[in-house]
Length: 278
Length: 357
Ligand SMILES: Nc1ncnc2c1ncn2[C@@H]1O[C@H](COP(=O)(O)OP(=O)(O)O)[C@@H](O)[C@H]1O
Ligand SMILES: [Mg+2]
Image 1 (cartoon, chains in turn cyan, purple):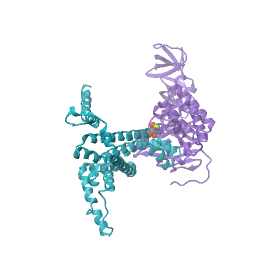
Image 2 (image 1 turned 90 degrees about the vertical axis):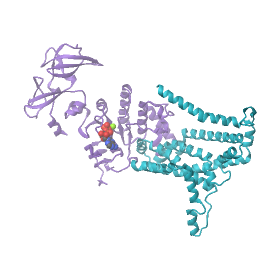
Image 3 (image 1 turned 90 degrees about the horizontal axis):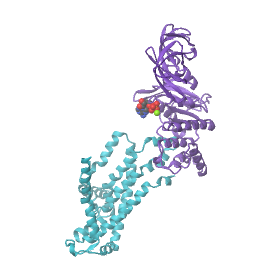
Image 4 (image 1 turned 180 degrees about the horizontal axis):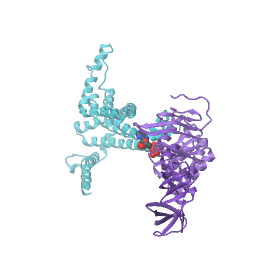
């Protein structure tokens, strides 16, 4: 047991140093004004939050939430049927399909996003084709479409996999029991499989929504240089304006919003969703 | 699909004709033939792995036979999907829906039938009462013990009031007391509600006490179809004799009609028709020995154990250990004489057993 204790301690220290400490510093920063490199000059204040709640920033936050929401819905609409179809395949093909879904993750995230820029660009293959058939050039990136497409492309596997896992975990005996009690295939889906795969839907949503709301690389590359998402705004505050304290306040607000969203999702996951399906 | 006879057949409610089934080339069920009458309580009895569940799954529609025909009400139901058969199942693994509470599990089939909320409510309440789980409506499935889950599974199938109810070892998770109660309940329900039961168990006592008809299955083949009485008293082969009840199976010699010898003595018996001087097995039930001061066999009591109502002795006669049950008190280590009346001697050979099957 001694060895195991060692691992637990190590993990505890790891989490404390790399997760808890930065978060604490972030929260402290958000409540202070003064020179952050000179502890004695720091004073407690709520001014950062006042600044963070500037209407234009709130607009960016809403916009981020909206894009993340759309991304999530699209991932769900594509991901659930894909996961469902894979579950029905025979085991060998099934494993190959899962590998294929994971395959893009073996290449670098930035590279993948850059290649989308080539594909979507005004001189890219799509626009060349549109041009040649006389439809003219269509703006495919540096707008919401580009950002959403980039996010859906990058985050879709995180939606498919948890749903796939929760679907494979459903005991076929339950499907048989439902059929025995008079359920048609449609009934089996809506009353047994869908409710029982809801945990997968919720963890998929968590895995897509979190990175979608905080990403700044995809929005910078495919959304053009503007402050498209809250991630870009925070990055700009820290890296360009060097205003760490307001940046921290915005980050804390985003974290609180995410915690609330996650809390609601959790409640839903445990709730009585199946009743509404009758 | 197989040709279906169109005229109504008047034989059994459920009939199996020449059913065979193999999994991965390994035969699991061989040439199964039997029929169940309306309102009958039929039990399929056999050791674990003999194919009972597979047989039940074919009747329920979850498995298709490789060959043979299954009739329900005289109509071939091969290929008919489970939800189109007026048959419900209590599954061996309960298979309750984990995302629903007890009430919703039991109401599941009724809701699919689009019955009114009031009707459903009443039926679920009644069913819960029947399985002694009143007040459990809101409980989640995970919070139930194995025995409680098993009873919910029974209630869930019973509320459907099917023509035929298939039960796959439905009482196996209950402790003895509750099991005996539920046996009585189930038998009562079956008679009162007029539902045909096809009941699977590996417990011979359960099979004998509940059923109108028992099918003994071994290695995927039917050994005997008979009333509980005959299964117990007239086993057609060694397997049935051994599996149903504790029996002494003794090597013997068939001298001539009505005469058999075993353990060094000659006995009168009721059996006729075996080859003279052939080797046979003699089956004697533990409670059929007469113990006393005199008798054809002399033995030595190896051990004596008090088992509820009776004493169970192990008596050594020559080199054979006999199990003997008696209401008289005996002490281990003493000598005793044994005798058997002709009626209680049952002669079997493997050959004769095969003929009968
Ligand atoms: N789907 C299946 N695939 C392969 N073998 C199976 C399958 N179902 C059952 N079997 C085999 O068939 C035999 C009979 O099983 P089963 O009908 O469950 O027996 P019982 O219910 O009498 O214990 C067992 O050897 C089991 O391993
Ligand atoms: Mg079984």
